Length: 81
Length: 153
Image (tube, rainbow over all chains, first blue to last red; front, top):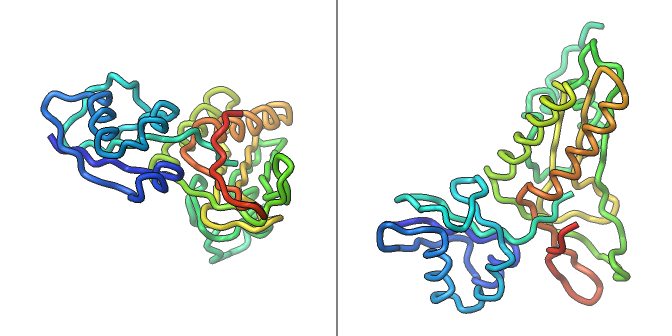
C-alpha cells in the first residue's frame, strides 16, 4: 500500500522535506511505517519516540492499522498559544 | 440592538481558523460582537502576545507553523467541548502562523456565556487545551540562535 507522510517543524527541518510517499507491504500499522521511515531517515530514530501520531488529521495510537492513501503525520510536542 | 451594515471581512470569516494576517483590535471587537448573544452576560477574551524574552534569552521574533486542516479540526473539538460542558454557544478561536514580531497577537480566544464564571472557566479551558492538543509549533528566534519549543507544559 501507499501512504503519504507529512513532516512539520523540527521533523521537517531534520528530514529536509515536507512530505513523501511511503510504500508498505499490506497489512501495515503505524509502527511498521515508523520502522520504514527510520531506515530511510536515520535521524528520525531519536525524534519519532517523542512524537504523537495522526492519520487523516486525527490523533491515533501507534498500533493503528494503515489504509491505502492514508495521510500519516508524526507530530513533535505541540506548542501553540 | 440592530447591527450596523458592514462588509468587513471579519464578519464573514469562520470563527475557528488559522490566519497569516495580523490579529488586530478591530478583528477582536468583531469576534466579540459575533459570538455574544442577547442571553450572554459575560464574554472573556484571551489574547496571546509575543514577548521579548524566554528562559533567559532575548527573543528577536517567533515563527509559528501549523498542520493545516488538523489544527482547525482540533480547535473545533475544543469548541464542541466548551459548548457541551459550559453551555457556551459563542466561541471564537483564531491562531496566527508565520513570522510574528514582539508585541503581536499570536492567538485570540473569545468565549461568551450567560454568566461570568462559566465564561472565565471555558476560556481558560480552551486556551490550555489548544496549547496541549492543537498541532501548532513555535520556533523562538533569539539573539544567539533558533529552536523549536517542544517541552510539554
